[in-house]
Amino acid sequence: MYKLASKSVAERSIVRVGSAAFGDGGFVMIAGPCAVEGRAQIASTAEFVERCGAQMLRGGAYKPRTSPYAFQGLGEEGVGMIARASAQSGLPAVVEALAESQLSVLCEHVAMIQIGARNMQNFALLRAAARTHKPILLKRSASATLDELLYAAEYVLLEGNPNIVLCERGVRGFDPQTRNLFDIGGALRLKELTHLPVIADPSHATGRRTLVEPLVLAAAAAGLDGAIVEVHPDPGAALSDAEQSLDFAGFERLMSRLDAMVRPQFSLAACR
Ligand code: PEP
Ligand code: MN
Image (cartoon, rainbow, N blue to C red):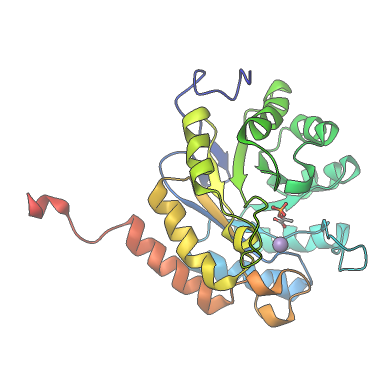
């Protein structure tokens, strides 16, 4: 059994990354490009999403691409670029590690380390990432059961790192109309099984920018702890995940609708 991740240990745990607090009853938005592509791209995105109310910045520097011929990310140079954008915008950054050898650079420059879906059961990487004592964003593999995800989290907890946020990013379905199948029921079941915060990634779950806003609102309505979404200054020119990236106007609209939903302007007391 997963002893440390289980709800029997605590009702909820709060994971803090800078001023963002996952699991405190609020809804944390993480936004940024799929991949860091250049200094201006990440800096302008950071500045814009911060102004709209995002609390964290995302951007991959080491990209786990299906094809070895696809853009692989800017590596260490990309880490430097997102670190600078993070400092300028004041938003703590999350960046994915694909290998243990990348951890020391990430540890030095970013606030949170992502273990992506493809590495969810890379147990050596999980242990090494945990030992950095940085907060970990652990994404569910496209074919992992919830128990497998929780056992993966258990590896991190066993290393003495309590700061894990779980992420539902869609599982492999049968219908290519969406890139993956967003398992909101599974995400809610996770909230029953574990005290760890759970967030949603509607970008990778659907692969379609039109579905990102409604699924963020669904995640907030369902009581999840936040969402991570892809935003690009010019999605059509994005070097990865162009179809699922929001442009700035799309992100601004999402944030205003989310704000209206989580901070309702009306009071039900008037109905009683
Ligand atoms: C990502 O967030 O950049 C990513 C590759 O996601 P996932 O691991 O969920 O596919
Ligand atoms: Mn992506």
